[in-house]
Image (tube, rainbow, N blue to C red; front, side, top):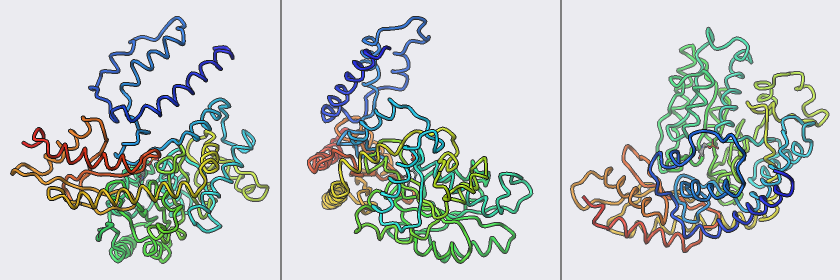
Length: 473
Ligand SMILES: *Cc1c(COP(=O)(O)O)cnc(C)c1O
């Protein structure tokens, strides 16, 4: 592709992107394809000869697009949002065009320094105290792995990387059962082992860890010769928004010298609004806090910020050349590849910088407040319908509900059938979860372009399909 063609196809892609975003309301949110449909439509062998871009682009539109789930659809109410505000897409285009590796300060000084600045902008925007620094990771899963590796190394007096875990005291990490599965994986990958992730009982509307039980288990583990390493707190768990009392568990962490990591991957974005900060009160005492601007805030995937009280601990855990420790903070040079497992790094700060400037915190706050209000409104409307029940009250913009069956049919099966029927219909997209062992349907409002009208439409679709005799047994 020569420069002229590059220009032409870049312009074509930009036009396509704008038309695509405009067309979303007319598309089903989730594609109506069967497993294997797309795979079979793609040539089984690689091309020996160059093909014209026209044909490649046409295949993209004909074969790929119909198999896409439209995460930027304003009626995407499933999982959590993965917002890519148009301005962040523009920034990503520039990043792709430059395609720099941003692993060391000198491999792109602007990328490193903008990262330091935008992470600090976000720290201020979320109301975290000065003294936290941070880094942009690819995903919350990576940030949590880093936190778990750091708590492991700190507990082992920095000997784990060198000596391995064989022959060491048995490490223990504590969390509730509301945390994301990325915590399980971090525990596996770090060599700590699932049996040493101790699940603390939860209670209350937000399924918060029982702090007294947490403390008792830590004391008992230590008495049994084990090595408590850290606690992982949840703010806005993926199932129903499970949220721990971070002030209380930070107190336990402090009393027992444990590392505290807080996972606020989704809910963290809402902390730009001061009125929601009570949900993570105490996060200022954590050693590590992760939140994903790539979820609710609009900085397209991947962009996950890990705030750190003592980045030296992470660098000591991950840096291949510990002598860089000596330069950290003294000559102002940061090599962010020492703050993450992969060496190569994308330039992720640019989209955050563009996003924050183009929208301003005021507008982002207004969006989040609307989402929360619309979600609460929908929960109230469903609660007012005789055949619906609210299973978990809104935590920010996430709640879950269940449709009551009229027959003796199994309630779980009925609600699974309902969620499938809603998603096959295509006008909205929802996902299910299990609450106290029973199926519930999750609903979250969070897409960048969602309006109050889209949430009204969701009410209409949910009630219409639930009452359609086709899904009744
Ligand atoms: C989405 C989510 C994660 C995982 O985020 P990735 O960036 O995809 O790794 C972790 N924890 C919570 C609470 C989440 O909502």
